[in-house]
Image (cartoon, rainbow, N blue to C red; front, side, top):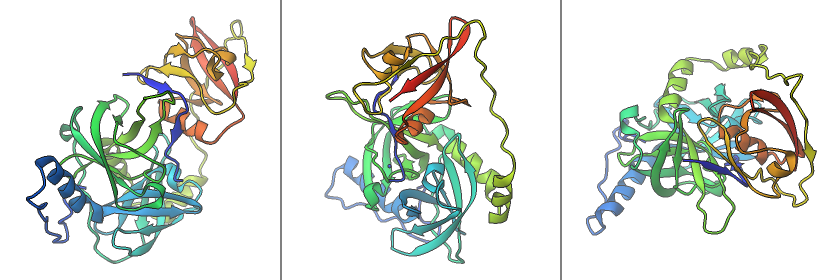
Length: 336
């Protein structure tokens, strides 16, 4: 399955499991509804107590309580401008101060510890065996700041890179909220949406797999805020460098007369190889061609299409994309 990277944007922060851990009993849906309706009703009733709204500076996102002592998982981009302190609001309206204790920019994950002694309803996290293409899924969160919003769809793809794709409707504010299976288990952390931008097309939602999220949680659950601040001050490990082949490398520069923040390419999400370039698009005007492999963006190695989505959401004026073409490397300057 190919992702069309046209008008693509992250679910900016402006985009479980049974909740009976604390004795919250599962209340069956009313019998007058159909079987499929009952499933959705039950998922909402089970999961909603574990889903929170996160306010971080001027940003609003969602998150999931993952331990009864107050750990919350969300997106890195939700908390990135928070200076480490956020406000977390539960579905019942209870408010807590939270401190960021770990982040994973590559997978767009962040872990928050709430300042509380309360025991909280924790989400149940699905294992890989319960994350299957074709299953019905549910996205729960606070799109546009409206908490307790549920949308449904199917899981359309499980990528080798750990990204999940769904047609469940996601909007700004859903960032960091859970993608759930019909058992109410979190199978992913919602993080981005691909907006194809042509008539009749459906948006594609993207989530980080719960398998990756759970590994991140277990690895960092005992962190303290002091540990995180110390780690943040350490020099970051260098990404692999991509040097322009000295005998290869034209550098293209062409303005996009149409404006906007559309790249205008179809990309294989596994290999990041361009399959198609739209005529008169930013990509076409900048010299990108079918067969080019996207390697880096402004010197940072590209691992998946979500990095491009998040970059375009920042409304850049230009970028340098490093590509591989005919066994040579080239830097292409893209102007929006």
